[in-house]
Length: 206
Length: 166
Image 1 (cartoon, rainbow over the protein chains, first blue to last red):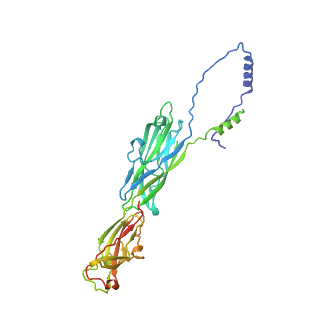
Image 2 (cartoon, each protein chain N blue to C red):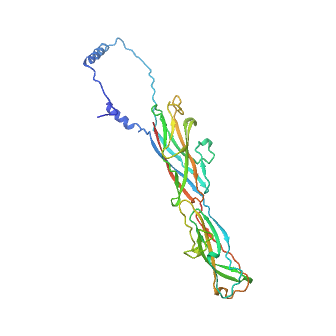
Image 3 (cartoon, chains in turn purple, green):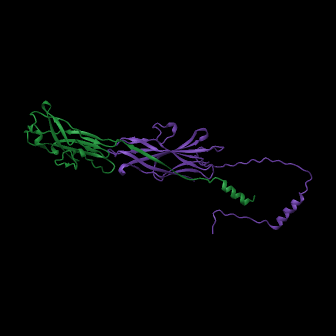
């Protein structure tokens, strides 16, 4: 039987146990009282639990049949299209060295939105992830994915790997924003009405 | 406190570490309505005068023609009859007959199931709308023209498309 997290202990030999006893007996009677003080520094990074939330839906707003509509996946500072890109916010990104990449995988990314009577509206997506120093409202870098499809993953390198974003010392608290934009392509004569679909992101480290 | 108990307590108080998450949002878009109605031809009883007390009839295929472009379910209606005006304030009733077809040049358009005012909804297939043609013929009953003063009569009616505006 195999154990993934095996543990073991070693029982001290009897001779060693006696040696320790003798040594203790010898120092049991100090010559005089004294106080020794040592300052020990210790460091520990405690990661808060990852927290992810969808903050804004991707909205192509109003479209004319036969005219494509583009919504850019871009950060708040540069949005020029009413900021209608979809937006996720992941807080408390891991600072563990073993977590080398933050991955945002499109677990569900429909290639068309469904409207009245089951009519479908074709969609192509792009995505952009940016790492933020939330305390200072400072963008530390971004990763852009030109075309996103079902199952594809936006990979953000973190924690002392090549190209790591926001990899500062001492480690700061980082957030990741993920923006989802795209192009909706209504056909000429596309059926009028409201079209919707659900996009799901699976966030994980590796 | 025994170490084992302490470990249990720490496990109980330590927040469960979340390292992976699924988070969803919606993608949405609104396609606007593009519905139009255009007159292609009028309903005319021709240059030959109608003899009072006799019927006059124009089949839909030879009557008024209207083109309807649509991208959503649209109900197209016309009135069941129209009163047209003649000399000295005289009026003449024309009963309308409606038909439809996908071809503008149809010689035998399909009659509305209901009277003109009951309307017709051009069918939609798949993701897109299309174009349909409405044909409107007319009938003048003998009784209507029996006492009508001689002269030219004219009037108008509307063909209406009703739809939900997006």
